[in-house]
Amino acid sequence: MSKICERMHAETEDITKIILQAAEKARAETSSEPEPGLTGKIKWPIECTVGPGLEGAIACSTKIGYVNGAKGWLIYQGYDIFDLCAHSTFEEVSYLLLHGHLPNKEQLDEFCAKLRSFLHIPHTLRTVMNLPLEQLNPMAALRFGANLMRQRLTWRDNESARPSPESAIYTDEDSIPMETKPMGEEHAIYEFRKKKRQRPKDARKNADDASDIESCMHLIAGMSSLTAAIKRIREDRLPIEPDPTLSHAGNLLYMMSGKRPSPEEERLMDVSLILHADHGMNASTFAALVVASTMSDIYFSVGAGIAALNGPLHGGANEQVIKLLEEIGSPKNVDVWFDKAASEKRRVMGFGHRVYKAYDPRARILGPLADYVTSKSGSKRAKTLLATAKKLEKKVATTLGKEKKIFPNVDYYSGLVYESMGIPQDIFTPLFAVSRVSGWTARILEYIAYNRIFRPRALYVGEFDKKYVALNKR
Ligand code: CMC
Image (cartoon, rainbow, N blue to C red; front, side, top):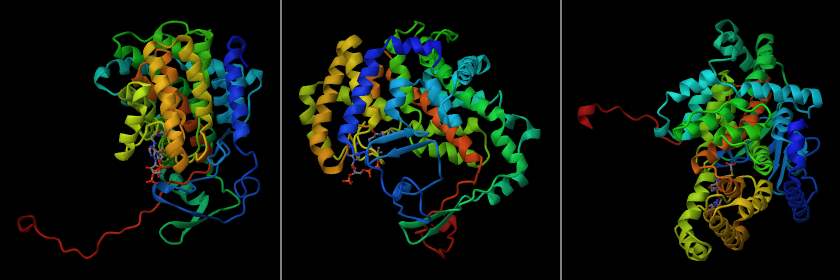
C-alpha cells in the first residue's frame, strides 16, 4: 500500500471494523459451500436455460470477477470483496483487475504515479467547459468527456495503427471462442472450444500494447477529473487541479469540493469505489464489451458503458432511491406508501437484482457505513432519509424479501452515504462510473485479446409475404 493510503487506513480503523463486522455477519448468514457446476473444473458442454434479457446466457469466460447470487459472494480476481474493502485501496484494486494479481510496492508506486499524472486532462476539460453543462445531464456530459479524452493516447487515432479490415475480419473468424446450439426458444447448450485460438499477430500486438493499458489508466483517472469538473462547472465554479499528496479517492473529493477531505471521507469514498469497481456481466459492462468487440476503441466502449449505466434500472437507481425516500418523507409514512406502491406494482428503487437472491454483499457494507457517516456528520435531512430507508428495508424484508427474495442492492445505501458527505444527487451516478470504469476497461482488455464480435440472434415472430401497398392506397 502506498504511504498516502497507509495513513488513510491507519486513521480510519472504525471503518475497517465496520467492514470486518459486515463480513462476519455475511459468513454467518450465507453458506460457504462451493456451488456445484460453477466452481472447479467445468464440464463442457454447459446446458442452460436462457430467458428474456439474456438471463442465464453466457457471453464469455473471464477471470476478472465472479458474483454468486445465491450465496451473496462478490469476488475480484479470486479475492473476496470484504477483504479488499477492509485492507486494500481503489488504486490497488484497479491494478488487480487490470493485471490479474496484486502489485508489489514498486508496481503500485508506479501505477499510482501514472494515475496521478493522468488526472491532468486539460485539453479535454477545456472542451468540456464549452459544453452547455447546465442543460446537460451530468452522465451525458461524462459520456462526451470520455469520447473527448480519445483525442490523446489511443492508437486508433493513428490511422497506420488501425487494424486493416482484413485483419479485423480474420480476427473475428479465427478466434471463435464459443459455439451455441440453440434448442428452442429458451434453451441453449454452450460449448467453448477448449483451446482458445490466438488473434493474428497485428491484432494481438494492439491488444497487448502498453498504450492499451495506458488508455485504461487514462480513462480510470480521467473519469474522476471529469466528474469533479462537471460538478464544479455546473455550480459556476472552475475545475481544480489534483493534489499529488492525496489518494485517488481523496483527489476525487478534493477536485469536487476544493477542500481537503478528512481521512474518514477519503476512506468512505475509497471503499465505495472498491465496491462498485466490477460486477460480472452487468448491462453497462456488456454494452462496453459489445462496442469493443467491433474493434472500435476503448474510449467509445467506455462511452457506451456510461450510457448504459445511466438507466434507472442500473446505476441510475442510486439517485432514484433518494427521490423515493424524499417522496415517502418520513419513517411514519412508510407503511402507507409501501402498500400503495405494491398495489400499483411499482418497483422499489434500490431493491432486487437479476443475480442476487441473497443479501447483496455491497449493501451489507454500505448500510452500516451510511449509519456511521450519517450519525457522525449527516444533516437533519440525511438523518430523516436514513431512518426512512431503514424502516422501508424492514417492510420490504417482510414482504418482497419473503415472497421473492428481494433485498437491498448496492444502490440502496450508496446515495445515503454520499448525501451525508454533502455530494449532490445528480453526481451519484457519475460516481458509479468513476469506479466501474476499472471493471469495464479490465474486461475489455481481457475480451479483445481473443475477440469475437458479439452477434446474438433474435427470434423473428413477424409475418412474411406482405404485399406492398402504395402510399395513396393506405
Ligand atoms: N420492487 C418491487 N418488485 C420487484 C423489484 C423491485 N425493486 N425488483 C424485482 N421485483 C419483482 C418483479 O416485479 C418481478 O415480480 P413478478 O415475478 O411477480 O412479476 C420479480 O421481482 C422479478 O423481477 P424481474 O423484473 O424479473 O427482475 P430483473 O432481473 O429483470 O430486474 C432489476 C432486476 C434490478 C432491474 C429489478 O430488481 C429492479 O427494477 N430493481 C429496481 C431498480 C434498481 O434498484 N436497480 C439497481 C440494480 S443494482 C445496481 C446495478 O447493478 O445496476
